[in-house]
Image 1: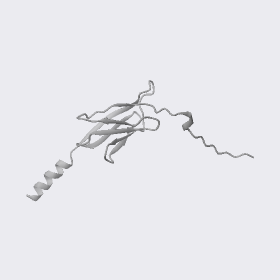
Image 2 (image 1 turned 45 degrees about the vertical axis):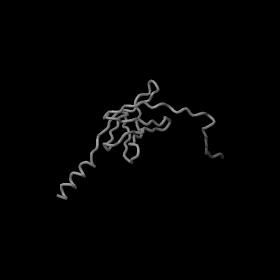
Image 3 (image 1 turned 180 degrees about the vertical axis):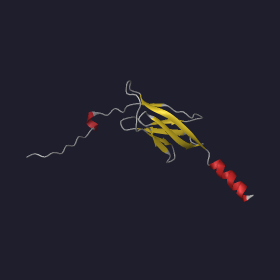
Image 4 (image 1 turned 60 degrees about the vertical axis):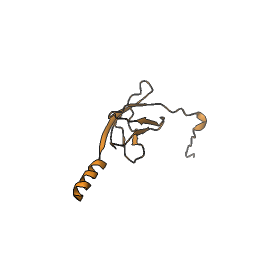
Length: 109
């Protein structure tokens, strides 16, 4: 009886779903973004997009939000709902010139 209850509980706790999609740039002509971090909010589960901007992440059935982050782009949180395919477009982050620090090293003889 104990084994039956334990086996049933572990099956319920282990329910997952695979979420796939493509990440592209909102800037016209830039296309797919490789290397975007895709994370299930509130967990350490995540993935990175391939060269074509595609990703696949195995998330718990209780997952509600995916977080997309990339250098030079706005971080985006997207509700999953009942979807298994989540395609997104990331917007560029505008950086002012006074926010950039340039450091140079050199040798002079």
